[in-house]
Image (tube, rainbow, N blue to C red):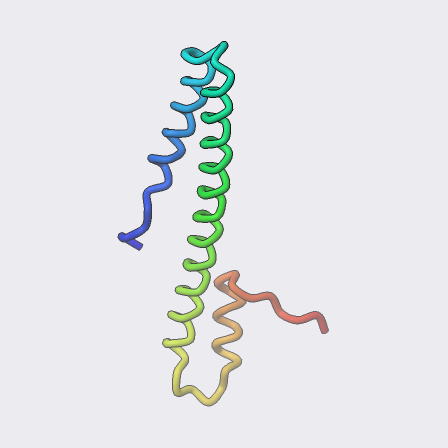
Length: 93
């Protein structure tokens, strides 16, 4: 999707925070704690965005396959398409 946040810009920010911590603020405990808190929050946000983007991608693929199969009487083709695309696992027999 073109309107997604470019997560690589934040990954670069994370590296900058680490450099800042290591090179510029040794000895300033309160600032070091603030940087660590920011880094921890950024990691949580990035992980959640990645998880959401994966879910969005999965849903988009499923929607596309469903749209291709609308009006068909036999949904076996849809299920097979889902399986082949890696979007669905067949139930255990």
